[in-house]
Length: 335
Image (cartoon, rainbow, N blue to C red; front, side):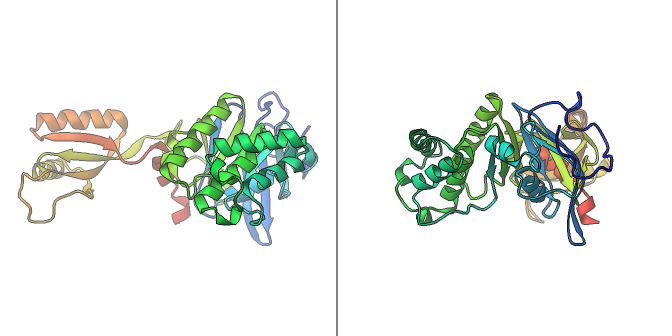
C-alpha cells in the first residue's frame, strides 16, 4: 500500500483501491509548498501502462514540481503517490529501479564520453558490465549518436545532449518514463524519432508521462492529457473529452472581399488571417480570416451557408491542434 504522507483524507479513490489499481502512475491530493508558495495544491493524476500521457500547463503551473515528486526527488507535503505500484518516499529504491527520469536540462560530467555516460548510469542501476556495454551501444544507435560514442559530452550540441539524456533515462529498460520537455532543442527529424520511440515503448506496456510546450507534437503522440493550472488539476473550459466545443478556424476564399462582406452581413465576428491582403487591395484577391466556430457541425453549416451565398471558399480548417485549443481555454493564468 502506498505511503501516506499526511493522514488528512484526500478526494477521490486512493492508490490500491479497485478504481485505481494499475502499475502506472497514480496521484491523489498531492500538495507541495516552498515557503509561502504552494506549487502543488491537491493534484490528482492517472497515467496508465501502455499509454502516453501529457502533462500540460503554463510556466509556473507545477509541472516540474510534480515530476520531481514522482521521480522521488521531492517529498510531497500531503497526498498519496504510486509509481509502478511503489511509493517514491517509502520505497525509493524500488521506484527508481523501474523509473526512467529525463529532466528538462541535461546534466552530466562533460569530460565523459557519450558511451561512458551511459555505462556509468548502467552501473548505478547494477547492470552487469557486459550488459551495460551492449545496452549503451544499442541506445547510442537508437538515438543516432553512435558516431559520437567516444567523444566528450561537452562537444555535443543541445539537441544531441537531449538525445543522450533520453538514452540515459532508458538505460535500465524502465517500466515508467518521466520526461520533462524531451523535445526541447531537437530538430524536426529527431522529434519524429522521439515520437516513434515513445509510441513504441507504450506499445510494449510502458507508462509514459511527458511534459512539453510543443503542443503540436503532443497532438500526434499522446493518448491522454492532464492539465495543471496554479498547482491544481483543471479541466479547460468547454473541453469535452480532449476537444474544446468552440474552436478558432481559418477560412480562405478566392475573393477576400466577398468573404469578409458576407461574414460581416451575418454578424459573424472575424479577424484577418496572416495572409490577408493589405488594405486597398483589389476585391478579388484571395485571402483568409480567423473565425470562432462551434465544432465540426458549425463548420459544416458555415460551408453550406457560404456556398448558398456564392462565396468562393477554398479551405476551412481549425487553427492549431486539439491540445493547443484546449490550452488556450485555460483563462485562469491571465486573471
